[in-house]
Image (cartoon, rainbow, N blue to C red; front, top):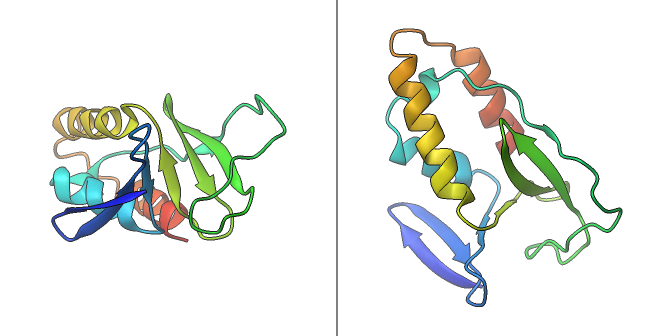
Length: 125
C-alpha cells in the first residue's frame, strides 16, 4: 500500500491493483470534503452484501480475515469488523461520489440529517 494525501485525508492505495483503503472515518470525511451538502442527502443504510463466498478477505490494517462484504444502493465495498476500515475496489469511490452529488442535486432543500448521521456512524463506529 502506498500513502496518498487528499487534502486532510490519508488514503492507502494498492500499488499493484489501485484499490483503496480508508481507515475508520476517512471515507466519510473524504466524501464530505468532495461533496458539499453531503450531510443533507438522504442515504439508506448499508447492508451486508451477498455471501458470495465464506472466505473473508484479509484486512490490510488488522492483518486478519475480517473484511465483510457490504452494499449500499448498488455500491459494493468491504468493511473490517475489527477496525471499521473500508476497502474499495475498482471505480467504487468515483461512483459513490457521483451518486452522492446526484442525490444532493435532486434533494436540494429536502435535508434528512438523521439518515446521513446513520451513514456517518456506520462507517465511523
